[in-house]
Amino acid sequence: MTKPVNAIEVKGLKKYFGDNKAVDDIDLTVPSGVIYGVLGPNGAGKTTTINMLATLMKPDAGSAKVFGHDVVKEANAVRQLIGVTGQYASVDEKLSAIENLVIFGRLLGLSRSESKAKATELLEEFGLTEAAKRPLAKFSGGMRRRLDLAASLIAQPPLIFLDEPTTGLDPRTRNRMWDTIRRLVKNGSTILLTTQYLEEADQLADRIAVIDRGKVVAEGTPNELKKSIGAATLQLHISDAKRITEAAQTIKKVLGVDTQNPEPKLITAPMRDPDTVTDLLVAFKEVGIKLDEVSVQKPSLDEVFFALTGKTNSAKKGKK
Image 1 (cartoon, rainbow, N blue to C red):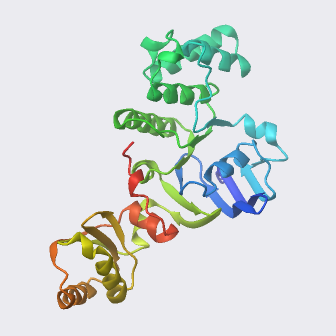
Image 2 (cartoon, rainbow, N blue to C red):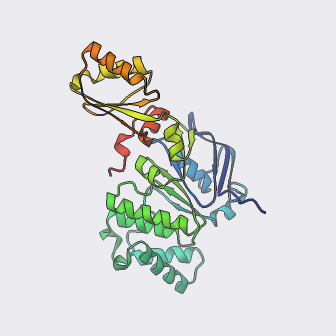
Image 3 (cartoon, helix red, strand yellow):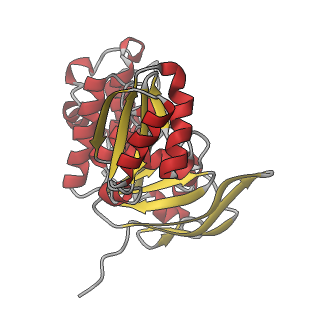
């Protein structure tokens, strides 16, 4: 039985801009037929990685293959297998939605009738039929993002790169995009999704790579990544917001972990050993730090992100 070819295989990939190591020795393996999330802060190297995989930029070192085709040596073959939707719309605002899609179809070698049929099909798929002839100047941000994704699917590519596809969208439009992404995979496509939104990665991705400073710092399923930082998260609501810093220092001393402060009176920390919580409460009592509430919740990707990168990403939980 023939072994399935991975959608993406990356080994030792590097890209430097002067002294800046944008991508620094990345290894990735993306199986076919999955949504693979790449999570990381701004400047982590996500977009640069996609640009190299999509043949838009040559790597300085390492290798990358798309369905077995080398992205440098077989760039033309790779381009026939992929669709790319970037952070900013690539459509022409002077044209209507259907005119944009027909032009994309013609550029990809479809006849005029085939291009129009495919454009009509995609407009229906993305809920844009009623706006088909409307000037793009009157489109909302969400409508433009959906049209941009539709344009990348004209040729029905087996691999689709989505670089922060829901940036700036309202929650309702974001959820519609999520449904569309799930349908694409159900119909046989593979998705490589970069995002800063933790909820998005958690909802969509079968596997996630966390990239920071050009390196993969962790990889696995969402549940595997959550378990890697502990069984649960301790949430402490401090009575006096002025003592948050002192509380964080006490937690560091007793539990040996770093904390987050997502709200003025809320402090959170990974709870690796439940037995030490009693010691922490005793320490708080000794220094006179009063608590309004103590609770425990399962780890989230927010805690994973913070633990791996040292950066809080609480503003990126899908609140757009």
